[in-house]
Amino acid sequence: MLTFAPGPVVSFKECYIGEHTDLVCTLQNECAVLPVTFVFHKIAHYNICPEKGKIKGKSVKDVIFSFVPRHIGTFTVKQKVDIIGPVAKKDDFTVLEMKPFHQIQLVFSGLCKSVSTSVLKTNSANKGNQQSDVTPVALLQSDKTQLRAHRITRNLSNVLVALPNDRPASIRPAEWHKDYRTIFTKVPRYCYIDPEFSCTVYEELEKQMNKDYYADYIHNLRKVHLKKKEAQIFKMLNNPVDIGLKPASGLKSPMLRILKHNLEIEAACVNRNSLLTSKQLAEIKSSSILKEVNDCLNPEPLSQQEIEDCSLILTPKQLHQIVIGPSTIDFGEVCVHSTTTRKMHIINNLPVHIWIQIEIKSEELQRTNPLSHVITPFMKTCIPVVFEKETLGNFKKSFMYSINQHHFGHILVIAKIVPVALELSTKELTLNPAFSFLAKTGFRTTVTLYNRKNYPAQFTWKPVITDKGMGFSICPEKGDVQSIVEASKDIECEVVWHPSFSSSSTGEFDLCVHEGKTLRLKCFAKVAIRNAKSLELRIGGSVEVPDIHIS
Image (cartoon, rainbow, N blue to C red; front, side, top):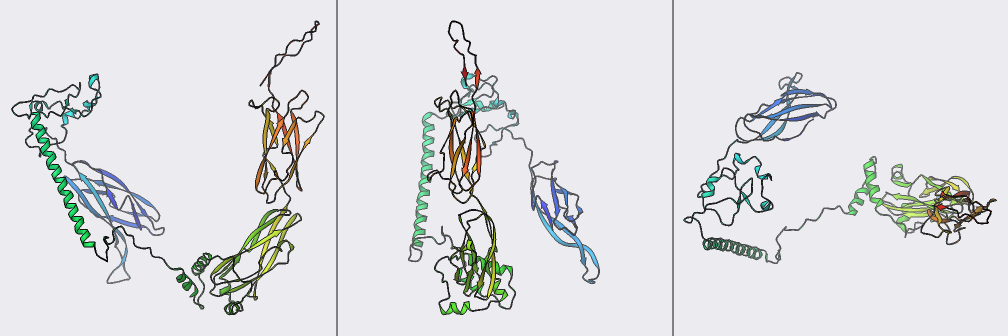
């Protein structure tokens, strides 16, 4: 009815006494017809604006939640929201009054922290109550500056930085393994070591050995305790029932599954007098689809049970549970002399056998086989419908099928018979010079022939010879047994230009498809001459050497 975003748990940011934290909450009325009237209860440390209001159907409203702490602590409270509407009186049910009839609970959570300034303590005797906070004097990020730092000490690690107000700590006994540096210059800080209170090197090693001894003792004691515990558990579980395994430890319970024969029993137990629902039909169909059988089916009823079932006259309710289709088999575009197959599905959702017989009179569908099937209960099968035609044109005919020799139906077959065809990747081909080949064979490229039909295509390239001759060649010139273009495949043909003084830079080829249309391919050789100088005949008989640059 009424939803909150964010919600139902609302967490506020941390704040201090005297401050407040606001949060915008969006209330949405999920009902599209009736409006909703709400009222928030008053609680301590939290304010809501507005506290009450009304939201129209499928509308939203923003409400501001404020966390205003009065003292320090964590405040987790439940905020109750009443939904008000007309409610009948207990004494008189004909009179309605506005009362809360529903209540929603939200959880508000907020934290109020204390503001305290910790004082640095230099007394090392009481380390348990020593403050770990950094004093406010050192909170200026001055330890990050590199202005006056010495170059020698810039890359030192594991160094403690001394605060500017810890001078009293420099005269206490220092630990010999710790290195203190100043903030600005990063030089070693002077620490006065009092010989009366400081430990010698031998005493420090003795203290460390004492710590290591007790640490090893506690570690070994824990290992012994764990071994004893494991031995007790093994002694408890070492019996013929548990065989040393802890019950329910790492074992997963088996998943619950409904057996298939239960589905068959439920599907078969459909009340004869009740109407067949779409849910029941979907359940029966899903169980039958899982059992697809295409072999070992009898063409005629043989057993006594099959003969009794196939002689029944089915009711309209039973016929509705038999699926035969599709009602229209569309083969699409089919090439001449090609053979195409489509599947005709038969689903028996009845608990009895049925006998399906197909009668085909059309010559184009005579290769369809088998034409008779006895389908077992709750079973699915497919009959391949084969189409073949020798002439062009449109095909649209139907064939008849029967169920138990009493109920008849028709399947429509549609097809469009087209000739074999090939497609060119481009109708105009430009040949650029390839610098990795010789000059006579440097102009070459390829063109792709696509066969998008369902029948292999044979082709032949025929050059169009003009007065200027033909300077192009193509390979393969014709589609022989090895170069034939199979159905739904492609082949590449290589075009080569043979340059000479009399060869033309343009040429054409005709792609002749056997029992198909003819396509034309235009070829251009791109020759670029940057600088050329004409020849000049001189009286002395000499000829000037031409200056020609070909790119």
